[in-house]
Length: 485
Image (cartoon, rainbow, N blue to C red; front, side):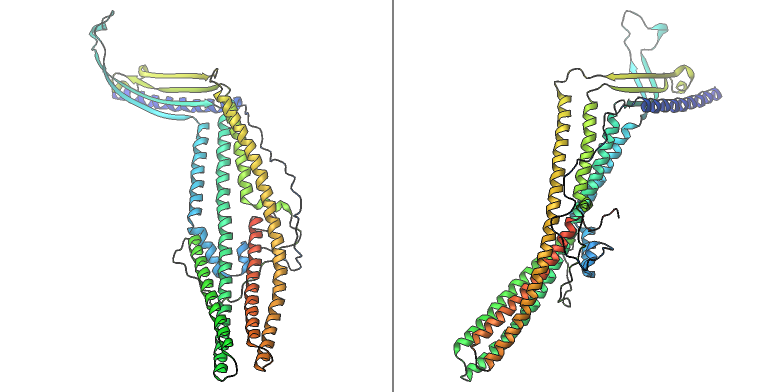
């Protein structure tokens, strides 16, 4: 008996395996032959953007981009700050988690294309009634225990391509989440670079102001000695004191702004104990020079544009899913196993059970619910097409703005450099005339004020030109070279 039972079990296992393999093969073949997709191929909407931007740069000494764009500023501390921000900024961490969620959803949707196979078993103890029109046969006990073991499969035949369209939508959504993360990183990088360059600019302005304070302090001391010697009046002393204290107030405000910028950099990098060493960096870095004639197709580098494109791909697939719901859905159900009153007889041939079923679900009346979903998907497509056009137009405008800002800030910096040189010469002449007794001390104070303002304006123009170059990198998606090159 034991040998026979073992043989029955072995034969049952083999037949279950054969049944499962043949069922899977049939399902795959049926699905491949019967699928009739309602999803059209995605076509990117046409755009009438100009081939070239409205503004250009006279770039006689343009630079090639060989690495990450922020490395063009040749500052190791800046490189470390950008790396730290990408590793520790919480917005980047949230974007990465969104990618993981989208990938998991894509795998879940894709699993619907494969059969759902499960093994079910049960042991049920029950009692049937002894009262009825037909008495129990042969003194059968009303109490019984039933053992059941089944290997089943449920599978929806993808006749209209609904499942494949849903997978395509989930795949596009996962790609969109990746570009959304790139958008976060892209914006974060430009924020870190701009704030760091502003920090350097404020440091240079502080150095200039401290130097001017020292000059005015020496002038105040000289004026007091001349007053005590009866050479000048008390008016010169009060004027020198006012100029000196005004610069002290200006220095306090510059230090306040610098500390605020440092706090913002600490927030962006996720390092609330951030300290910056810029004591030796009095001069600002040089702004990179882009090549002339930047083509508008470089906007394809921008992750926000590529994100909207993937959202349109997902909307195109969602339209197919909504249309497929208007057609009948067909599902195939199979099971194979054994059922017996005795556990030892569960695998013998007489206890074998099996079943194959075909289900059809045809929507007839639903109050327009399914058609409304099609209309919603169509409206979403129209929204995304309009969004895509708006993002393209905004990107085109941002590049033009960055180009004109970079060009005009370069010209402004050159003009202020000439103004600074003239102010230095004017102060030298004013000092000589005052010491020779040809002019009043107010002329010296005015020349010092003009020189201080010229110094600060020149540094601010350098920082503005650097900011314009950063904004150009951002507007072009992080490069003035095509990623396909």
